[in-house]
Length: 101
Length: 436
Image 1: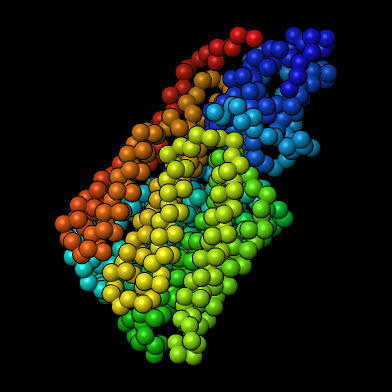
Image 2: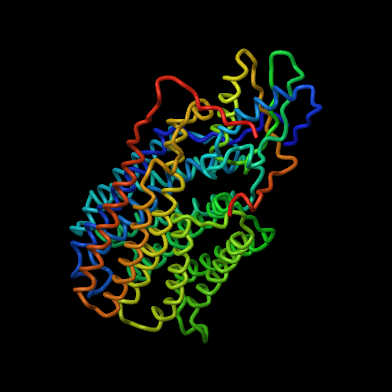
C-alpha cells in the first residue's frame, strides 16, 4: 500500500498503518502491512474506515482472526468509527520472497 | 468484492475431541506394539497384530483425520460444515466402535463385541460420508479436492462394510473364499482408497498454503486421481471375481500396483513443483516430517514385488510398518502441530488479536519437542523395520521402547496445546510501533 504526502488523510492513514503493524498473521508470523495484505484505507466516509485487504489464501482458516485483528487494532486509535473490512482477491496476493529468507 | 465467505470451521468442541482421542490411541498403539514383541517373528494374521493394525488405522489415523477433515472441509469448500451434530455422532460411534473392536481382536473373540464394534464403525463412516458429501457436494470450486474427498469417503464406506462382513465371516463363515485373500482387498481399499486419496486431496490444499508455494501443473492431479482409482478398482474387481493367476502371462496385482504407483508419482511430482516454487524457504519440523513421510510411502511401494514373489510373511509386516508408522503416522505427527495449535488459538485468541499482545499458535506447544519427536519416531521406525527383517527381538524391543517415548512426547505436547490457558493482561493495549 502506498501513502502519499499529499493525501488529504495522510495523518489518519499513518496512524492506521501504525496500528495495523500490530496485526500479525499467526501462521507466517509477519505483520499484515509488511506482508502486503492491506491494499487500501478509505477515510472519506464520515464515521467509518473502509479497509480493503486480501488474505494469503482465499480459504485461510485464520481469515476471521486476521479481519477481527484489523477491526480491533483500529478501534483504539479511532474510537467511535466503524471499521468495514472488505476482502478482495483481485489483485491476488503474491508473497515477497525477501520476507521469508 | 465484499463479504466474501472466508470459511467458517465448526466449533472447537466438535473437532478437538478427535485430536485428543487420536493422540491417546497413538499411546495405546505404542503400548500394544510393546506388548506384542513376540508376534513380529511369525505370521501377520494374528490376534495381536489385527488389534494393532485396527488401533493404528481407526483409533489413531481415522480419528485424527476425521477431526482434521471436519475442520478443513468448510475452509476448502467455503461453506459451513453440513452438520456439526453428525460430526459429533460420528465421533461417538467411532470411539465406542474402536473400544469394542480392539479388545475383541486382541482376545480373538469374533462374537457380539467384535460385531458391535464393526457395526458402529460402519455407522461412523456413513455419518462422515453424509457430512463430507453434503459439504463438498455444494462446493463449486476446487474440483480436484472435492473429487478426492468424495472418492476417499466412498472407499472408507466400502472398507468398513467389507471389514464388518469379514468379522461376521470369522464367527459364522458364509463367504467360501480364502479369508486372507479377502483381507488383502479390505486392507487395500482402506490404504489406497481411504488414506491415500484423502491425504492426496488435503495435501493439495495444505502444502501450498504452508509453504506459500504454487504449481500450474494441475493436470498431474487429475492423472493421479484417475490412476489411483483405476488401479484400485481393477485390483478389487479382479480379487472379488477370483480370476485365476494363470489367465494372464503377467502377475496382474503388480499391474494394478503399477497404476496406483503412477498415480502416486504424479501427485508427488505436483507437490515437488509446489515445493520448488515456494516463497517460504525455511521448512519447519512439522513440514519436514510430512516430506520425510513420502520416502516411507515410496519404500513401501518398492516392497510390493518382494511381497508378491516371496512367501515369507515378514515382508508384509515391513510393508505395513512403512505404511502405518512410516507414512501415515509421520504425516499425522507433523500435521497435528500445523493444525491443532491454530484451532485452539482461534478459539482462545481470535477476538483479542490486534487488541492486546497475544501468543502465536506456535507458542502453544514446545517446538523443540516436535524436533525430538521427529528424530525418535524416524529412528524407531527404521530400527523396527531392521529388527523385523533380521528377525532380531532385541532390536525390535529397543525400537518399540523408542516408539513409546515418541508417543509420550507427542501426547504431552498435544495436551499442552489442548489445555492451554490464555494469559490475558487485565488492561492495556499493544504499544504503538514508531512511525518510520
